Length: 179
Image (cartoon, rainbow, N blue to C red):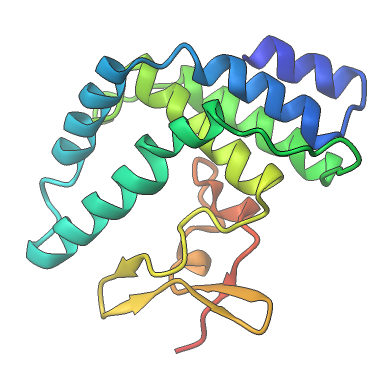
């Protein structure tokens, strides 16, 4: 997938339809078995999250992360005339590719399928759907959640992660929720 994304960058291609085709092709390599294994990886990754938050995170991430791969496979929308922010795309792809191949000893989610889903969904959500990384309603500790108000998305944790070189929050369209 990164070779195709690099070709888009070299060609200065900022068309959503071209990106969607790459993401659809890559998503077709993710099997139901891969999704089941990634669900287990996700659950294991939440082992230190407490009680209700664990259940909320798990349900949200299953629906909007692991299962969203099916939405991409079935996406029949026409994005032909639509473009995305090319400069942000380039930075995003570079960061994703670096993180894809850099797996630390403590990384729970280290399977190739999980990393592929993460890359596909992140690109799709950010550059095709133009939605925040965490969907509206995603709950965080303190009973805060991602909100949508008057055409603007707000996230309660964006500022906490925007300087993390491994976090895609820096590219998320949501603004910091003031609380």
